[in-house]
Length: 217
Image 1 (cartoon, rainbow, N blue to C red):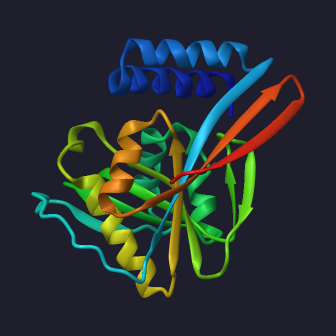
Image 2: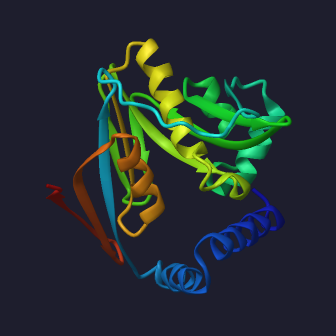
């Protein structure tokens, strides 16, 4: 990625965090980024749902929204998704080609949200950790909803639809995770039936890394 493109990604990311979380959240992230070469510390919470158990779904006013599994040829939708989640920039097409699953929600032809799922070995960049999942397990890489669709039930609808898709493909469990201070993400996970089970505390001082685990009751 060129310097200009990288700068544009960071500008969009700062703007999105400002709109979503406010001034103080942006300040915390800027400070954390500034000291990152020396020190990092964050706690990541993992959750899981048993897909064999069907949870009751909510009634949502999303009649104009269509859901579709993407392929690597959906270039327009891929571009829109990469603008919603900057960390995916330039990688989503390859991920889909290599077997990842992406459910996208559309309104009037535009992507309003998505849920990206991976299989096999997954990387958790926020805690610099890899985990290999069993053949009947999946990992939720990212779920995101555009700002205009928040608080309308689209996040839950994406989850329920991906649950059904994975269930029909023979998958038994879906795992996911979020930083413990990401209250909206954890609230959505609880709402659709995920069970939180462990916190991973990742700390790095210069080149010394450590991980500690705490079971969530």
